[in-house]
Length: 343
Image (cartoon, rainbow, N blue to C red; front, side):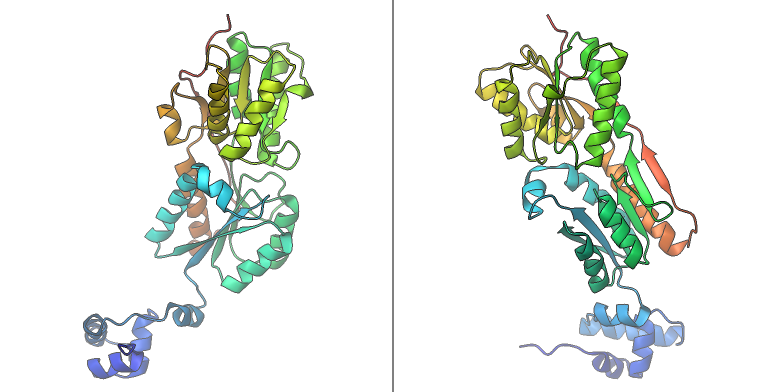
């Protein structure tokens, strides 16, 4: 087995002290330019790989940003396996982090006290949390003193966090108002969890606002829960709509992935979209425009959401901003082939 190259080997090869090599690796300006060049050349010739853990300890920086997804199931696998939303969001976060020379560390945790323990064990420099509950937000506020951005979180302790949201209520309103304008009055809404998802609660508020504006009474029987935003769960939600005694002619689902499962179940039962059911999604994933029929959906800029969440972290780290940033990104309706005027 090839012997691992050490700092001492680099120092000997460059004809300098081990301390000089350490200074260069840690970015300290304590050696001359000529010495730096000798050390850099030795590192390259010996193919030396520095111990990032040791460097992070000496600089009190891990060069790691945590990306934490709050779970309502046992694993990240069911959601990440089928929901492309997270691919786009994480890509945005990672692209900014890489530009600053940082890596991201991804985890899924569902228990409040485990969140703060995970952050402390990993010695993170910053943290982005997706879908945090109030109890998790409070737990982190008590124990963690690094920049934190909460994404898609509404129950936030005052004065504790940077936040990144979209206008979820407006999105729910636009989706429902579009269907109402086409003459639909019996509109099913499919949410992941009506009571435990602050995002779905906001979109439900928009749904109710549109109904009220059009003079259509709200009916609890038209609210369906998929349990989570996976294809398997949405197949069951689609079946529940078909089994309903309500005269449903349209569906608004709070994610495109859920729409995909519902459309699949409808097709398997001989139902046509939009002739039998109009359907509207939420997110405007890249795949949604390529479905047949293409999906009418509420568009949010998921990539920008990830990019701006990451930028908040680095602004707090490097600019030492004292104030908290709270952003709400706009949404817009993308009208395609999955909705039509009721006949």
